[in-house]
Image (cartoon, rainbow, N blue to C red; front, top):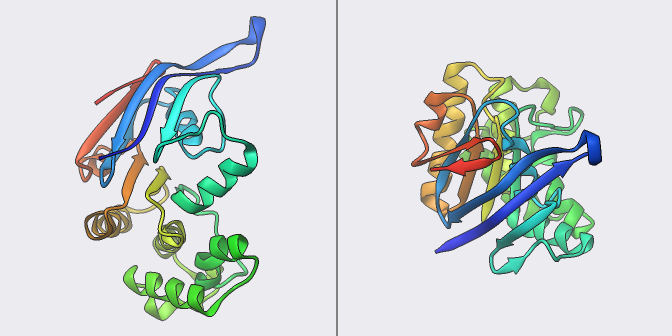
Length: 224
């Protein structure tokens, strides 16, 4: 079953003499439950594509549909609500709040959505951290965690609102090989157990090989 489709996607930055076309009529379909790697050289448009798929940026033209919703026609308020309900993010630099505990970081998206922390959210967040192998680090400040532990907290945070799609931009780029593979093992387990769709941008062929599908971005278009 199709989760999202983009068709003839174009993204241009600047104007007139300074115009730069990053995406050039890109087409892509992701099926529910897929675990896909997004590959391509720097400047190929991978990050721009992820930003658009995450509803953080609108394309210049083209169609972007997810779960049957035409996101190119949605208002900013509707995009914010859609993103919070259906999309999770994992970044290369994890973007944790250092003075918050692991648990507080994980439940942050839900607290923002609901306007407060709840006992249900805390229980769910703690369960996710246990699943990530961080049961003994639930109440540790994020600043006291190792790099691999921080990234596992970031994965748990991305899953907190049970999104259909998780977008990961170089999620293992700052980790040693052992930690990187551990994070990917956890992502693969979530994909298999929960059916969550993952699109993972990476330059690492070893990481890409753990994904069932490889999508290559080149000259603003995709293959694979």
